[in-house]
Length: 330
Image (cartoon, rainbow, N blue to C red):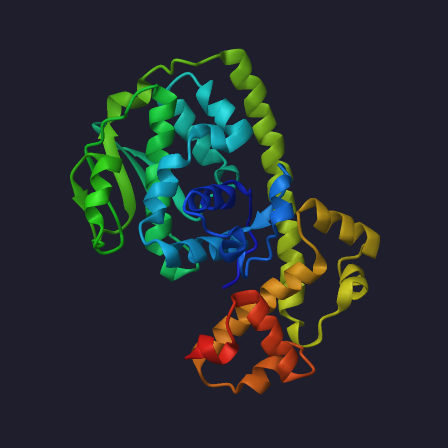
């Protein structure tokens, strides 16, 4: 299922930074995502989770433990206004409960929960959707970054009692030790780590009620804007998915959205996207699904996606993925 959630460019920028240190061309990491180098210069740009996951998949193909490394670098300062609101919270528990109220601002692909059993507190990440091939990567990225956030908030490492993961134990599991420093379990029912419940009541060194109130209100407004954009973008994507074989064009889509083409273009630009980028993204996702099923001939896939010629589809798929559709299928 294609999802229409929006997120920031923080994770993408971090991936490019990590691989830049190894001399990797950013264009190779951005391949197929619809994100261009120029997009990275817009601090408030929004991309879809699908675009972010494509960059993550490109990174994972180059380095299997990249989720752990990215998590280590995802400090609380990476979360903008939400980061300030967390840092100025009264206690660790207050900060974590606030963070979990705004999953859109966290940019998570999981359902996050804080479970307090009276003795232990668990931070749990479950119900990972879409991209099953990235499930382990996302679990590593998510839990390590949550641990880093807790450390940043406290101003010292949060001692963990245990950590568990849904995926099987990977070959590089020894790298987990430095990130969690506690007993580890795999093939679990969710991804989670536990710490003594008393830490939830621990006062934070940078607590400030005035700043916290101001930042909390900004987070509330930003979340309303963010989720409103998500709903609007979700409607656009839904309409386009239903018409991939005969795309309506910008004018036609604007009529279906009951707005002018100028308004539609402006809103898409505010999201850091365009009509063509969205159409290409949806065509690419559908093309991968159809090619993986290995039933429909490539010329029929081209027709299904609205291409008048098979050669045009082949060129487009090569541009999106860096390989020919027949190579992808094989």
